[in-house]
Image (cartoon, rainbow, N blue to C red; front, side, top):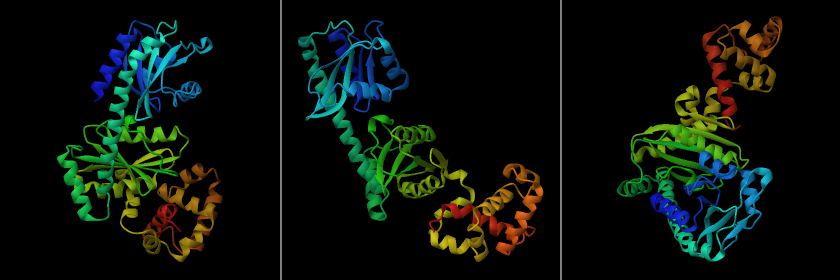
Length: 364
């Protein structure tokens, strides 16, 4: 299908005698064709970075291209080095799926010639709509892989296997956001399938691609909309039947990640315990009355966590916290008094370190 879209763009460039670029409705590059050596910063940016900038999108959308049913002329802007261009919307069933751009600074493309290219745009709109529909259908199958019902997961695995949609081993990425806005399928490689499940974006990524790069790209796409994202990654899931467990582990990694960060399951260490039990059970298992008292004193809790993270090195702890050693010693005595745990005892240190490590990730 991508080849068909590339052919459409090349035909349009030849028909109208101008460099052509096809972008989706979010201004991400789909295909382009050269015609001579004419170029401007907008076209260069789209080709090099596979998308136009938000400033370009805002500027062009002011001309009503999202609602247009026919060609729209975009005037030149010499202050930005922007050449004049013609926009032909790629529509299907009254829905705009993308834009075919022609560099036409001297307005050589007449309305009658532009009209000759509209059937090509309609064909592009059909192909883009079909691909979006196919992705949506497969996305439903991916959602079934995550179901709590084993029979639903097994049926989805069989259907995806018969469709050759995913080739194991697989990676699973989870993106946690405040609002699960959809990810445009054009923004990710065709082999990657995505769905929204339990308010999280879930990507299933075949092994030949770079799972970390795909997860980071999806995170950046959402962050460009001003949405804070925590991303988690699990790999490999050896078969479609293992995707459910991979999702659960990637979900824990996303939960442990800071906003703007992608965490891999293998990097979690003791935080993998978040997969083993619910928050209440983990809290009961790891917290003591003393550690709970300590958590009511954030400065002392931070001091204890830093001290334990640095293997009890007093000098490094004092430097990290930017306090005098005597101040640190005083805090450590207060920590022992509050927790009734001895920082000289290995088991007590383990109890305290585990409680402080898990506490920020448990729902109180």
